[in-house]
Image (cartoon, rainbow, N blue to C red; front, side, top):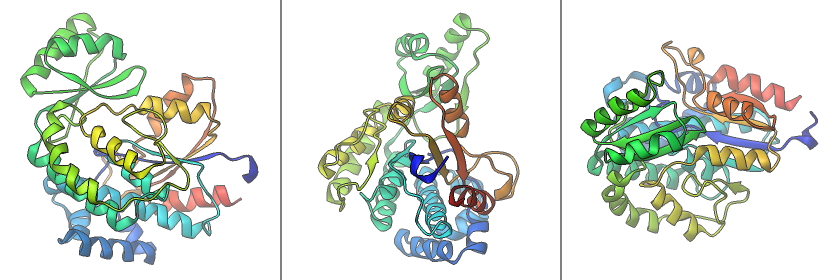
Length: 327
């Protein structure tokens, strides 16, 4: 595929893709990453670098820490990639899952690094302080699980794939939902997510109200490329005031990730690059696998579209992807 034929989308993962040691290879190998992490320390007012590199995991998993840590890691990967490609590989579209939407808005030119970091720091504090509940990921279609969820005072938190729906609610309500869902779909077992609350549900309304003044006051520009909204499932209105309202609503409305992917596919995206985070039990950054890759490839398998996927989540994959796209 020639560079002229590439329609590139940059994507960024959300909470759950953090790990102790995140960024250690980037800081070792790339001065631009060192500078970004030191800047982040000054902005957040605590030793974010030490927390990312050394943990403890329990502290890194706290929403108030997870969100700044992931944003910095994702944007460090982005800056390194730009450096490795002489900033010649440009997206026509950006998108992110939950927290990742803020990274996507930085990549789209709507937010600068400092503003985005201050926003997600406050967002994480509000979600951790004022939120409640838990989350379950069901391998079920929305139409199958939503009626059961609502019967048990639970609601949809994210639509990741046609057959993957995340539900949020209080722990005891989710327990009842799990039992009832098992009776209807005995082979479909949900996965409990390690979060501090039922994100993207009505349990985050108080958090959103506390976050709103900071969001309203933030400096935001018109994006230079299109960016996707989790809340609507479609493109952000380029008006910064409209973007802010969608980020406000995003806190207590479902993440429509499958809609984000499908609109990107329909509009001709044929190359997707994922920046930041990592999953897996291996301790080293090179042992990690990307957070969104599986969802993206499953969404493609269920569609009439094709796209090349690339990871840019550590030193190794950054170099490999940069080389592949430069050539």
